[in-house]
Length: 94
Image (cartoon, rainbow, N blue to C red; front, side, top):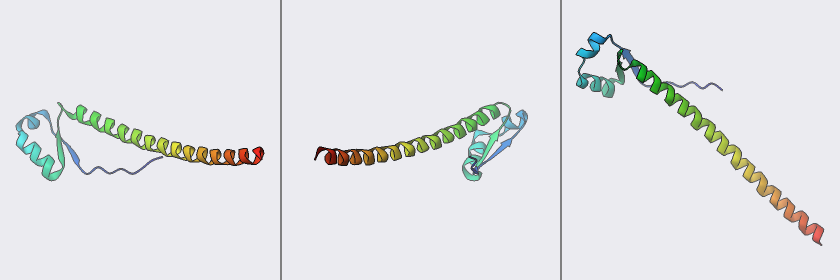
């Protein structure tokens, strides 16, 4: 089951020389105002790994919601079964 997921930010890779010249103030300004994450050789792998883990977590959450839905349906079916068994017990007992 594929879903289209759009990210609302960009990732911009700079070489190590430019990454060092860009200050923390400019990086935070780009991130807050333009939703651009500055990445370089020192942190690109970490950013990509965090994205991967985030997507896995979203998938697990989706699967967990599906499990809860199945359990809720099962509970409803057992309640119906209990009602039918009680009705049958009353009919057999009379």
